[in-house]
Length: 320
Figure (cartoon, rainbow, N blue to C red):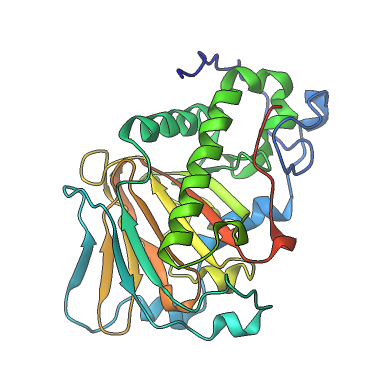
């Protein structure tokens, strides 16, 4: 079904600031007055934590990003179409430091890539959602995020809550059809992860942060813009058990640099983004990774994360 036309709301010349509170689903308190938003920064732990995934970690990890092994292995190039490829790696000890969930906590670890989970048309529609939402703001630096669950949107050097600031106008930007597509894509990714790692899909729960990202070659203005540092998802967020990324633009066509790199002891391995390509992996230190700096163009993707612990689950976004 085609999405409804979107009208970009008029943005005033006044300074941007934060509004509202974090949301588990779209909708919320749309009646908040915009005047209450001005002059306040949105300091939700989620907003400040979203880019912790791509911030600097201890120097030992940064040094580890450049192993002395030979060359770079390309796990998936942009020009090839992959049905499904899985690369097993030994599980780390990270999961033993957290509550165990039988049938979900990783016993089989690795990384996978596929171009067969969503269609090219669906990927283009997901890109339009990202472009529509991120057109309302953006970081002063090279990395911007949009979280449909909490409403967090990069704005200058801070974040705003789009649902609180725009209220009912957001329904002209992001429709229920958009949210339905988002939920369907999430469900299929969930099922693909479960199939690959021999899990019950019902044991996987969506967790935060889950967000669209837009990266370009602009100079970083704050730590949130420094997306290229090595990190381990489960070290940054203890709730993470499985991480996925759906790419919404093409490496070497829409942007240069910006490849996803797994950092291993002997050599590094890279995935080249491709519109509609899904990569996913267990979130422990067996999958230390980073993103190359984007050298030109614009790179779009969405990070969707899953936990085995229902206490850390979040609801799907919806207008209903």
